[in-house]
Image (tube, rainbow, N blue to C red):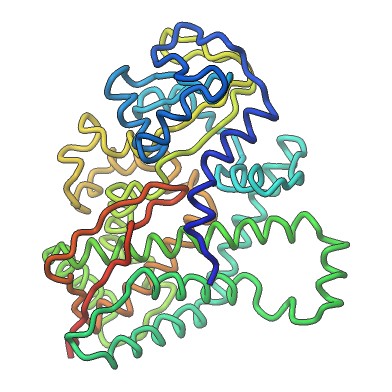
Length: 397
């Protein structure tokens, strides 16, 4: 198995360093509140390290200085936005770049995809349609993989502890590789031929596969974790699954009817702060509130801060899927890129995979927490548990 932990530990800092190296910004902070460099060479990098993660650093920074803050990475200015209101001022709804694609390509040094706005828009639509078509055509495979995991868990005695993170990573890797790649690349000559003719698509497929695997594994893990500690939520989800499917099979048409399950996954993304930081490069000089953001400044979206803002989310630390019954709440969530037309293809893929898995598991199993277990959070590219998350299961029938 790939060691995603090593990848994730270095990713965010490598991303910031790469972007700032390629796109130098003004030394002037433009009057934006924040902290001065701790060291001349490294800027506030020591403060980020001492905080434990970039997310935790941003939480402290926004608490001290407000919704728009600045700090320094080396000699370069970075601006962070930490409320829904200021994010809405900055987000360009016509922007077609996928934050995950942008970040991963920066780290992996891919140079493709630098076309015009119209070309990028067409590519984005192409990939979105590709994801939709892949999910539809491979639904039977996804259902088969979910049922295989169910059979494995049904074979366990009720006292056995299940290593949830490990099983979800394995499930996500099987789902992504088999659904995205299939048997296309079994022949070496076919790989070479495809690379010559469709190099950009192959690179993008690799980016999509890596991002989808990480996001899907973590979304599945956190969703099940929250269900094990929220008996009422799990009961309500079980009732919806029974009402929609009855004794019949899980089908793509009926999956679309699982409205409460959708809310469970949205609340999982919010409560877990699944992707705590995103980034955009300031293409032209911009303005947020009364602050001027210089051209070519790296602007961070402190999504982990935004998703826990009590002014936007009442009782922000409570796992409460019912909050998404409010259309305004869902609209706010969608504006952050976590749902609707602005969600990235990787997250759309993860939502569908996790929905099918939960439909299969919750119908047959009680998902239970391990008594005394405290799950500590590790904030990286995608938020995960610091140690293995263990659960137990028992048969419903």
